[in-house]
Image (cartoon, one colour):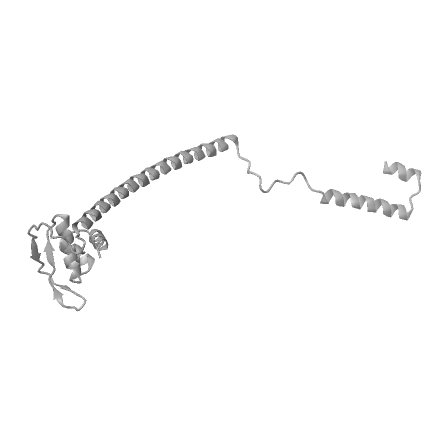
Length: 183
């Protein structure tokens, strides 16, 4: 088509520049235009159908495992909560027994006395004044006598962990007995 135009009319220099300018603009447009559709940067990656099914199956297995683990943890928490409630109930009952054992003047009632089995520990321990002192070793007795023994040792200024060793009971139990001691 350009050849027929060139053959029919004389082309002057100005027309030639216009043709070059329009052709250059066309080439620039073709080079600079967006090529195809740009991928969505937030779009999901394309996987094959079998790969998608594998991922789906793994996710379902993971959900089943998480559900099972949640049930186990819930059951363990329920068991521990029930055990804790039982321990609290027992502590309340023992506290009520201690309160009923106290007369109105704040002094303990004389408890039925079983002869405590007290042996002297041959291994001396250092107290706050760095004096060696032999701790008595007490065999387990009924709870009232054990409480009285814990109170007696605490009144002597002995620490809870040393009392626990002396009466052969856990330190936590001795600390609980001392914490629930009537003032």
